[in-house]
Amino acid sequence: MSYLALVDGGGTKTLVRLVQAETETVIAEARVGPGNLSEGAQTVWARIQDALNSFPVSADRILAGLAGSEYDLHRAQFLANAPLPTDLVSDRDSGLMGAHAGKPGVCLTVGTGVALAWMDTAGRIERRGGFGFTLGDQGGGAWLGLQCMRQLLPMLDGRSMDADSRTLLSACGLSEDPSAWMMFADQATPADFAALSEPIALAARSGNEPAKRLIQSGVDELLRLLQEAPSDLPVAAVGGLSAVYMPFLQAHGIPMVSPQGDALDGLMYIWREARESGIERWSSHA
Image (cartoon, rainbow, N blue to C red; front, side, top):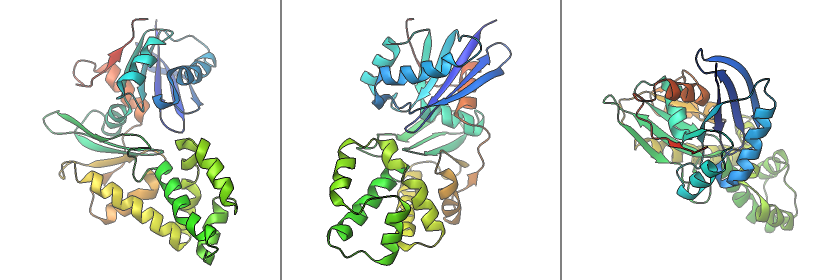
């Protein structure tokens, strides 16, 4: 009897599920901090190990779908530090397989970051985005938080802030001291910026005009990204901001469907259908 740990790591959190490999019975689950490989291989492994240590039995092998796995250096460092046999795939692929249970479809991942993947009716897999906070992730939570601060700061600096903007400032828990913003920006992680996305979404829902404009700008970015995918495939949105954006995307005629499963389900599918899935994966030598 062997045990497999499935790991779904993104910019804000990492979910770990322990399953009995032969029967696929779920033994335990845990949630720990960010699992994007840009955090550093040792940092990500420390968080995964915290989750593994909380389980009643030890894992024999790991299958991980992590943000940042496309970066050669990050991937190599992660696999070199593996404490037990580990397979790594892109989080875009695990999300895609989970959302459509291995069937043709498009998966838009929109959480801290943004990525797009799809499998066409011939079984070909394509991917777009996933370039990280500095170069991409337009429409994601970290991007929304940064755009919010960029829009509010000139008004705060010039003491010309209108009532709605001041309400949004307060909702986000931001200081009225611009120097505090500079200190925050100097050390903030994508997860820190993404923490602002929830109050932005709530403010937009309540009719706050600056927040509504921010959400609309995110919608516009996601629509541009979705133009890359075949228009005849169903689209599932996953990630922390998927519920925020889904009604807007539907209103623009995007054929949205509910995800059939999450990224951990996708990892189980990749494990089960290793040869048939067509998913690229990388293995450690542990």
